[in-house]
Length: 146
Image (cartoon, rainbow, N blue to C red; front, side):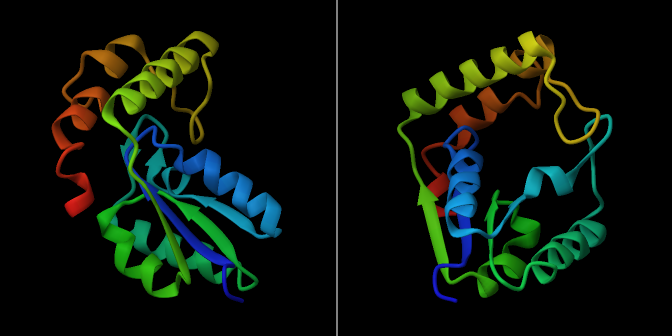
């Protein structure tokens, strides 16, 4: 089973989901996107106990292998012990910011649904306290150490 339980980690817009989906396709295993488990309609976070249980269930439902993307600290202790491979994506800050702008504007323009009923907005995407841009800029330098 070596190489059939893969965790893909990295900052927002590092390419986690894209890489994980392609690896899962090539390996013929499930792709598990943690954001789809974590985010409820209206951008409501799943309570930690429910989140941990749902991630555990997703992994258990795929005994033949999986590729999971996302790096939520709350489920790190569930994912990493079961993984046989960890891919860490550490992308230069200018590349991350370019990708994040492109992705955010694309989602806003198309009205893409994210994890059920959620949509990105210009205000939330660029100007809110919870903006991914602020998070990336503030944490990029120290992120790998975590």
